[in-house]
View 1 (tube, one colour):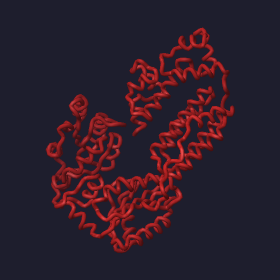
View 2 (cartoon, rainbow, N blue to C red):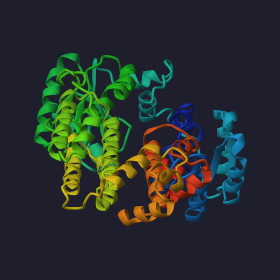
View 3 (tube, rainbow, N blue to C red):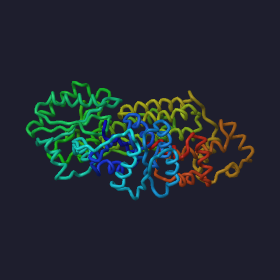
View 4 (tube, helix red, strand yellow):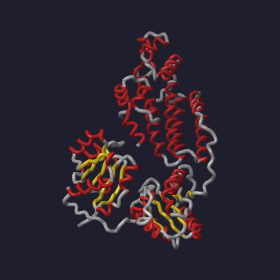
Length: 513
């Protein structure tokens, strides 16, 4: 049976994926773009879900690169053909992918639609079991809507008439729904669309082809029906119990031209979804009906917070953190990613402070990674603060003496010196000279107070600082190795992997993925 040839795009550059998808009517040529992924790991998931005939993949990608992806893909799905995108400098990697079964490659600097079409035709021709043929239905509405949502302008003569004919009424809004902790399948999307039509008479609506975790619906009514439609959606969201675990319904402002759909979706609706992080007590967020947004009332004073911890005033530190969270929730202006990054670094700084105090906090040192993960995965500010509250309780146990004890003043000064000068050529001899100790005595003295030796503890300080830089700064790994006191980059990488189990580049990719 003849059908369209299914193509999956795997590339970490969003604009490359969008350019391939929207610069040609692929179905008229016998191909359909069935999905996309931003790295090899996502690509394998999409392959399992979509069963494409051909995969187009980049070489250099985070999480799982193209070379590993092709090798893994061809081992498990030998019938799927692969086309590799690469630059001139990556040809050795391309050679490896060809050896593992890739069908062809295209140099990115020379990539254009016609060349890609030629390569796709050649590749499809190698698959005798695939009888593909062009579709004569023209552009499907879903393709055109996806193109507009991605920021592309439709052709006025051939494409826009199809969209305007499909949505002929004068007023538009976009409604988005997201079930807690899961995505939606196609049937559920269709059921939601049917419910909209049932509840709101004389409406024109359509599910939009965006993130599968959301059900995003374009609503089109006459201007005089808009107010009634909004009230009906409010009633529906309240009946559905939205917002009880996390607020998941948002409704855009009204707009009068279908051409604005891309801007409204990208610039307003996605921002509304982020605001759900703050408004856990509302069943639906409606653009234009939120309280006024205020600049943050004050900046968080990290030094004062850490001073509270150092002086065993953990409850004061906890209350200061709660007050700051209340300000964030009231003003809802801060970017959610920035908040989570800031709080993750705050956890990191507290553990460093405890080390400076020589508080024995091995358990906290281990569990900080769980706290990082839980902060990152939290869906609301309330959930984040629950994680921080648990963390501060554990900090209280450490500094109060229930989980550890403090060392003598000399050891405290020694540790503070190491934390202040870790970025310098710091060895046992240099520190011993500074404190007027014999190096052998200092080594024994240090080991009697800490579970690790001098060099291991110094490496621990440096690697923890390197982790912080890899998480928060766009500095090269080579620069980071120098910044934390390693003159030999390869030795830094070796020590980093020993402490974390990952290379610096893998650690950075894993965090930012």
